[in-house]
Length: 135
Image 1: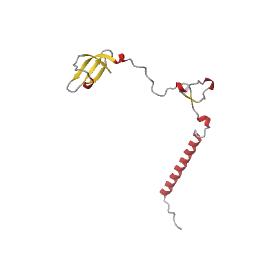
Image 2: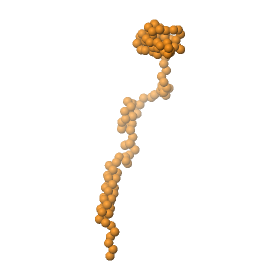
Image 3: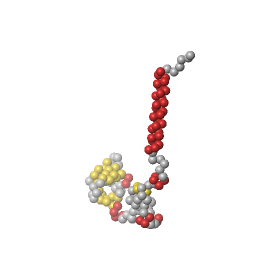
Image 4: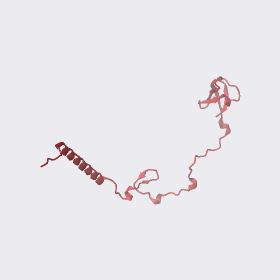
């Protein structure tokens, strides 16, 4: 009679593989039984209320407001006509470099520093000069 070609370690490896396969199958069945799949369509729906919050209850048709499509603004809001007098500001030259051709004007009202280039000037300026300018 011939002896079995399988060794002890080979039998142990096969047992471990079988055990892993069974554990995997068992976990798969547990996930299937506990999963949320198979819910009805109504259970999966979500609604948005008038405040933009997501709820599970449908909105009340009695509280619905009629909105005209002409009132909806999709583009950038239009600004009113700007008065040319508002664009003219007063300030003083805080820094100016003649060699490089740029400097800064400090606005007297807002105290902000505004960049100015020599190409945008109408005449020569020096530091601490009082100027009127447009942004």
